[in-house]
Image (tube, rainbow, N blue to C red; front, side, top):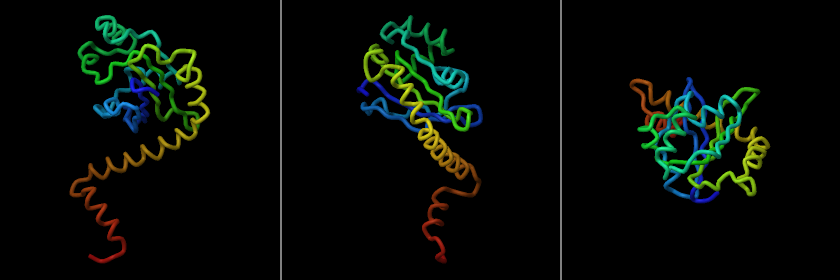
Length: 178
């Protein structure tokens, strides 16, 4: 991966996608701006529905009108939403992660470099697809354990009169009194 690329892993919960983890060589592209996404929009939705989605035709964001039109037509995003994207990628590859025959999450590879996903290198879509397929069980395990941890934190944060700090202190105290 180059400093123009990133990979994100999402899991599905209650008909929405939640960001589980993100990686890029570029710290600006690793930042978490939004953590919840609709099931019906974007590359993530296409990968979820069809198990694999690759977009090598998206115009570079420097061609703003063409870019916004592509994002509206192909992914259902309004222009104002597209303008607010922190990363205006023009190359996308999405792969749904299956567990026992059902999708449980999606990996999104994206880049602002028009040469990403070129068929003659390590970012060749078929090379990425083969890698994802080969390690799907590992990604599935990562998704299951990561999403369950996140669900526990949400449940704890949502309880009235309870706090995560109190739970942590109780665990530290263990069997001790006081």
